[in-house]
Length: 305
Image 1: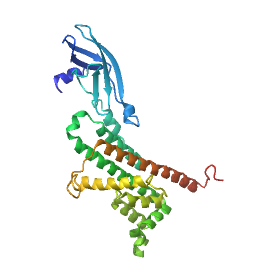
Image 2: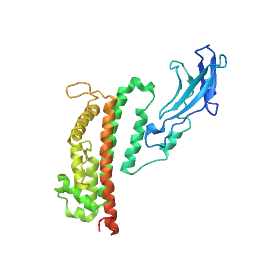
Image 3: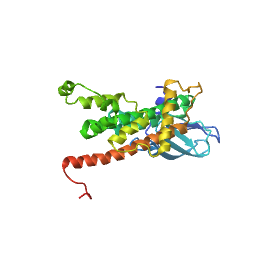
Image 4: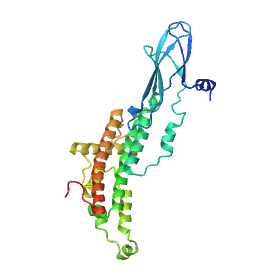
């Protein structure tokens, strides 16, 4: 650790240094620190700000200082003086808060895994401005990652359902010609009571869930839900699949060799569409779980007498 970092880090609050624009004297003071709250569901809700007044030791000029804690960095701002260079130690990751958030948390439910991954990628989306020179590769990566996260969710949620419910397993097999029309040997089925379940699971592991139109057929069969809010959004997801293909397999160029660029609005749009799809499925999944629990317990839900 450098000497200045050691010095700036030796305090209870946040030590700052800057030159007074009024008289040129060095202002060295300690202000109230701010810490980002990683426990909030929305990143924007975790941003924290402290407000401080600092006086120049020479001319007694007063400065209003704000410390803003964001998910990837910390800013110190002097009201009315945006060009003042302020020296301080950004201690965002010193306390290990972000490591503690993720190190001991290993989600296994499909929805929790999706939300966990979404939080991780949002940290990159709100990364420091120093990353701007490589923003285009990051935007491409985030665009692809949102599709990857959605694929993983679609696969995991469906597998969880068919492994736990034979009726849904039969519905899935009936919707997939390769499974429905296969001709396994009777001896193989006799040897392994889990034969159908294992083969269905293996098929889903190999299925390309970024073929969202085909994935939609499986969800209609199993959960009786349309994963698309409307035809226009289904078309958007088809376009996203094509763009993902160019980014992954053609290094960001289309079939004619033209560069396929990604801007922040593209990332926000694919995120919004993915979130909407996941929430639609989760709503149907919760209804299905309630019906399944009712059926297995032999009790009727309220209002269905």
